[in-house]
Length: 120
Image (cartoon, rainbow, N blue to C red):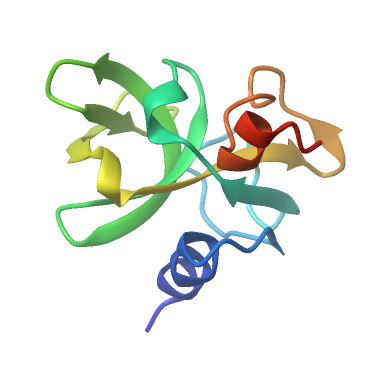
C-alpha cells in the first residue's frame, strides 16, 4: 500500500494528517517533500482551486479540484500542470489541504465536517 493510500485511510477515518508528499505535479503550490496538512472535508463544499486528497480510477491523488458538478455530486481532479486525472464522486474525496509548510491555504476554512458543528 502506498503512502497516499495510507493517508487517505486515516483521513477518511476522521484524522488530521501531516505528511510530506513527493512528486512535481503540484509545483509551485506544493513542492516535493514539503509538509502538508490534510483534514477531513465535506465534499459538497469543495470549490475549483481547492487541493484535495481524492481517489480517481483507483489512484489516490493530492491534487486540485478543476471542476465541480453539484448535480451529480462529483468533482474533477487535475494536477497543477494541466493534466486532468478524471472525475470522482463525493464519497472518494477524503480531505482538503489546509496548510503547506506551515502556510495556511486560503479557501480551506469552513469545509470540514467539524466546521458545521462550530468546531475550530
